[in-house]
Image (cartoon, one colour):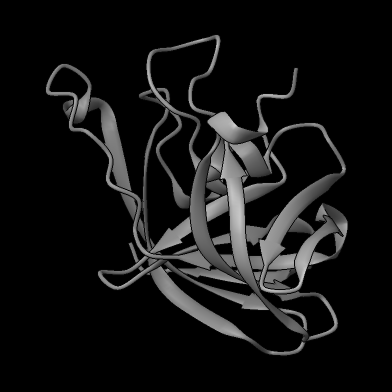
Amino acid sequence: MSDWATTRRLTVEVLLAEGEQLHGELHLQARVAYRDGAETLLEMLNREEPFLALSGVDGIIFVSKDQVAVVSCPPEIELDDPDRAHAATRFHFEVVLRGAARYQGWAVHELPPTHTRTLDYLNTSGRFFAVSTDAETRYVNRSHVCLVRPFD
């Protein structure tokens, strides 16, 4: 039996490498095996599977993650963990993609105490990383980034 109906739908905008924009919903798992709670968009994008399913008014399409430059959505609500909050570092930077698209924002991520630079954040594992503003979060595919300018 499929667990498709148990997913959490998240409305997103997907920018492809060639500039085409897609709108629809991505399906996130209701729970993950390695911690309590639902799957985040970043976790889904960084899964090993090469395709993601985007459902829209015309049905479902399968999009190659390699061709996805940016996925944008309203900021995901994250529960504060007071025991871990002191360990997270906030990074401010600008990302420039191929084709000259630019995104400014921040990321909050927990890194080892001796590796708290923007470069360390950018070199963490996974195909995508987050850039947030008050209005939205963009998940950027590292392979489409030309450069990053840190503001810290």
